[in-house]
Amino acid sequence: MRVLGIETSCDETGVAVYDTERGLLAQTLHSQVAMHEAYGGVVPELASRDHVRRVVPLAGQALAEAGMRVGDLDGIAYTRGPGLAGALLVGASVACALAYALRKPAIGVHHLEGHLLSPLLSDPRPQFPFVALLVSGGHSQLFEVAGVGRYRLLGDTQDDAAGEAFDKTAKLLGLPYPGGPALAALAERGTPGAVHLPRPMQHSGNLDFSFSGLKTAVLTLARREAGASAPATLPESRKADIAREFEAAIVDVLAAKSLAALEATGLRTLVVAGGVGANRALRARLVREAGASGNEVFFPDLAYCTDNGAMIALVGALRLPNARADDFCFSIKPRWDLATLAAP
Ligand code: KG4
Ligand code: ZN
Image (cartoon, rainbow, N blue to C red):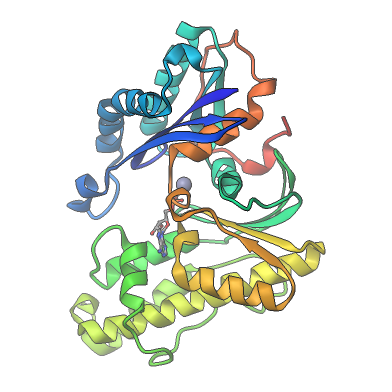
């Protein structure tokens, strides 16, 4: 079974072809980072318009790379939500129009299910059941994953997501958009322990997170040293020290809660997904700690950590057996709770 996957929930247009027998056959991606850079963040209307320009050529390119024609497809998957409404509509309408023309199923995929299952695109792939740490720009959650569509929420953020904290802190230090990777790169040049920041909720006794206080702590520290209006004017080396400690604080909390989730569920496999899963310090720490306690940890390949079409095509293929080829009405879901999904 061959499925075309279309991702347009935010600022990346991603299209891929997944074959249930041969795996990922092709994937194409266009990042809008350069376009949004001047605004310091994603401008939703610009994002939608750019998806309109890119999605059909990228789909053509993905099919060509897979050596296929549209008629060879068995289903068309698209990101139904959560995400920016206008951006989601672009992928949904293209996918459903194509499905209608081919009389094949259109499969509306939950973006976070894509992230959650993206480690299945890598080799070796994790076996169910596992604990998943989902850390993206909008989410910091721990799930017990019993199988496809069988997700139990173990812990959630009470305020900012981990990626959001990276992005906001980077912005207040005057780093370029997108902030997360910029802050992580700067952190590599900082001195460990040169400053101290709190580890919010590390010992809270539950599996929830809170990261907004960390950003405020950075602001307070930077203002004390650089003056109220100019944290961004701190010397580069000092910013690097702060970035290093900020990253260490987030990694400490994420690692502690992930290991606690393994212990609470009695599971031995941890899967990390979402954009923050690309963070090198987090990866190194989890590999070390999980290994030391006899657990296994899986990450998606770096290309599948951030938004991409491959994870949407994969979930589309997993859900294809239950999809119908007679319903081409689509509804996007800009807000959509992952725990409400059913198994296929
Ligand atoms: O999963 P993703 O591409 O989009 C969402 O669904 O949100 O995640 C994007 C988030 C952003 O907040 C970005 O700053 C963060 O992931 N991110 C990182 C790194 N690469 C991306 N955060 C820390 N370190 C990185 N290397
Ligand atoms: Zn995402």
